[in-house]
Length: 200
Image (cartoon, rainbow, N blue to C red):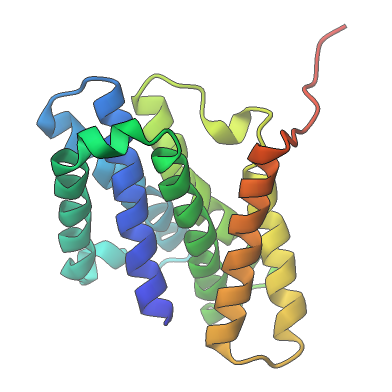
């Protein structure tokens, strides 16, 4: 289940990156690079910080294969996906929930404190998107008023609360990811924002 979630998150972020790059009218190589860094950026940062090298996608070529598959799916179905305004948002949301879980789990495997695990989960989920937005000349979502990283933090807290109940890991992953995905959908639907800080 854990490995499956990792693959799903990787492919979802690759699709998200490819769609963003195509919206910016980049060439095929540029689209692939954006898809790739979106998919592996957070995991690469996480693995580097915890000293797990070579990083995950270098050890397992399945990640590269699924990134390539996501890239080609985005290109082949770009017209249909482009007509769906929510497609980019949905892929990004799925990746957010799944990658947070992966960061939490990797932190626990390294015997880190829950607070550090939550920080790792947040970085894993957000850094690929930050890199994507910077390369596409956009202000990263994480730095705007939209609730994004906050959802990762809430998801991490929910994860550790549920873990105390000794739930089966598959159920734990499913509930936590559903909570984060639902929160993101609700935040956008009902326009929940953090207040912007303004200079007097």
